[in-house]
Image 1 (cartoon, rainbow, N blue to C red):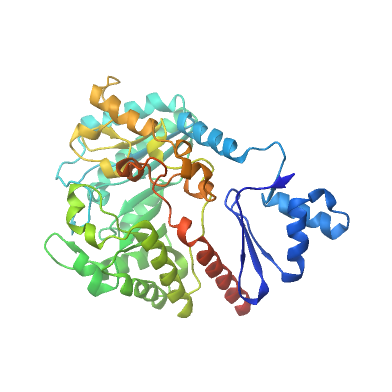
Image 2: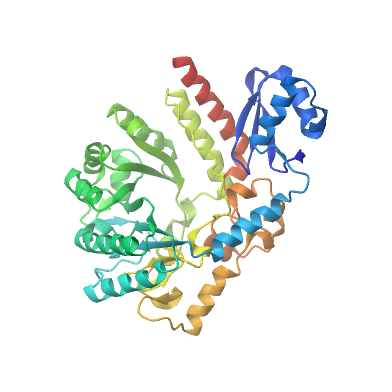
Length: 442
């Protein structure tokens, strides 16, 4: 056995060392008196003689800190990534029934249109899914937009049809989600969604009322925070609710107040809240580029925001998720974003009514030269071809980051680095603080 190349050891307050493995996601706390022995056993596991040493070695193997001598961890990751890319096992459909929206957000990268998906396009989508599910054992659906709740009847019809097809092909249906601004999503609508198999919703909030209402207002200029908060309060016992708090240079000082508002409403424990980076994407966002954080700058703000929450008695912090070779649906052969016109895209950020960046459509299997080139753009992107990514210690977590951002950046040696590359130690220390604080409360 040998040490994993993805081991991290960080000493924190009190003489405790945190051991994290980015390939398994394991995090262990090592007391000071045991550290020298464990470090030696990582180098020489065959020297384990006492029962305690043998328990240490078993734990190190179980957490992925020790791997077999013949294991090439990079090759294993690459095999997993290639399997995900080429597999047809899961049909993933992100469906936008409309690009229309009742909001007017200045950083929105979608080109808005009042067009709704026609009945003819809905039928073609079901036929497309029928063909694809013949080769797939799982179906993953996400509803997107625009604002998808503007088209609930379309969602109900298509969701029902897709579930029937999954049953026909004996395909397992993964939990269905919807991305919504939350303004129309009241308890009655949430119950309708639950009935048709939609169980998860992500809602975006940009800060406390005075900030959110300036940035995420209705098209008539009116604010939206109060109604969204009421809706979340009413639906969090019906659906699994994720709250994305958008963060850029304009609203970082106010972002934590959103979490406090949810705490004061006594619903914080019922939702999953996280801070997310506003990024400039495409023509629609060109005018906000100067207020968007870069990855490294955002990583520092992440730490500050979660420290602030802990200081205010809110013990919540993000934790790195191991990719398992799964980077993004855009690089999978069987993952598609469907526009209201039936054009197929690989990336949410490229979704539009303009077929220029499409990779096909649901009506035909014939591809134009432009669509073939668009597909090749994603097929050819591979973090294992990028020297810095290949050798990076957080590769299993990041896997080169966002493919489209990496492609657009065009860096020859690295992808679009995850914030974890810059703040892993600090975020794990905060995680440890949260765990200690929770234990002290018990």
